[in-house]
Image 1: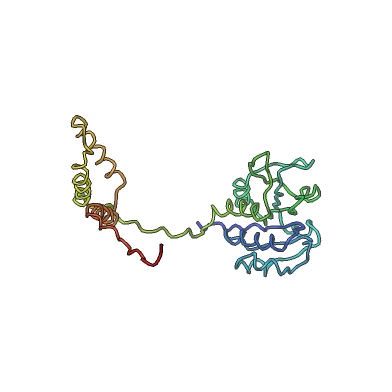
Image 2 (image 1 turned 90 degrees about the vertical axis):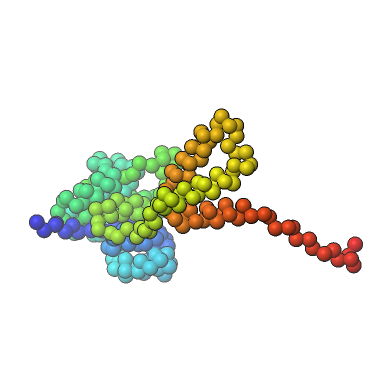
Length: 253
């Protein structure tokens, strides 16, 4: 069975104020595979020279961004509209979290749009009225302020969980060292600690040795780590070099 291809949601920035924030939002979008941005009445006009540097390479999002005179025009071709806000603003709507919204977008036909309001005031009641649902996240009630890029990245990240995005490559770990190398390390520790009375009193000798063995065995050191440990112990084992005595300048007093 052929997998259904879901259209990616459109990110709509309603009356954004600063070009830098538009650029940062574009960066957040592209991080998680979203590329379609729509702008409603950007305060400083569009294009905005401050957006590019803030986007840090997300130029494709900015280049494709479209400007609309009203929020209604920006979402006219969308059947599923979500308004991001922490308050219902007098409009009764279903309330969903970003993960639930992502699942709904994938399961419903038609285009989807997610609205984000101006940095200072958020979406107006008339903007929220266009949405089918309110999208919000649990947040500290004593400090519920998110900047525009933070809000976009929270929603974009939840959307990305169902996408085939590449994760950072995992570093290949070396396997644990052979038991013989581990035994050599334990013997080295024991040889250095024995003459210094570490295993005294005699009644606790075996318990102390077992505790030391358990500690050194638990991490699963690889052979490079054991070699490093042995080098440290060998350095401590060698007599310390004599202190360097600098000649006293007889002319100074």
